[in-house]
Image 1 (cartoon, rainbow, N blue to C red):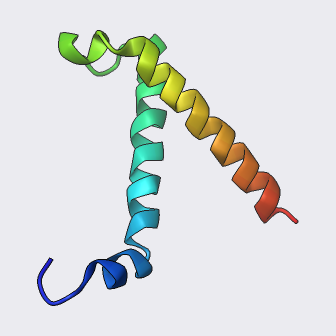
Image 2 (image 1 turned 90 degrees about the vertical axis):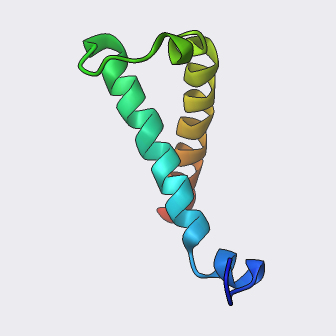
Amino acid sequence: MGKRGKEEYFEKGHVNWIIFLVYIVFGVYFLNYPLKYFKIPEMISNFDIWIIFAGGILMLFGAINYFRASR
């Protein structure tokens, strides 16, 4: 990590970027699922049920955060 410690790394908003990227990856996967625009490797296709489950949980977290932010 260089000169920065773990605490400083997580305080600077890097965790928010990681979570944002996870949302983007699941969003693109869900958009691609019915359209088949990108070819998904067979190894990843074996975990379709778990990917959809995790994406559903992320959507619920997003809805809760949206509700909390709108107050």
